[in-house]
Image (cartoon, rainbow, N blue to C red; front, side):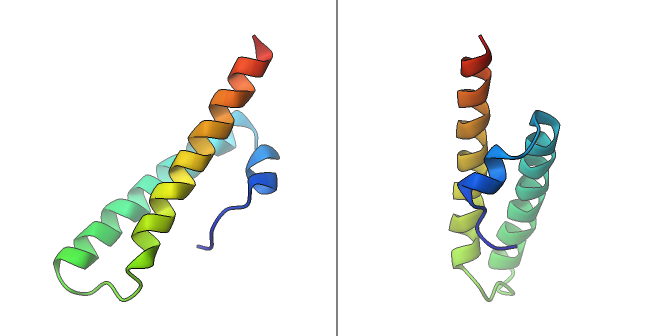
Length: 68
């Protein structure tokens, strides 16, 4: 999965954002196991997944604040 673009995230519904965060958390969990067992080839993907999660959560918070 490539880095998520801000425009793509802003186009998502809140439910889609929740699903994306959940999927990224699962991916991050699997990546951590791969790293621990020495099977992880793309080590930068861990950092990228973490930042994608933060990016989605930040935009979701902005949208919730805007609605209030």
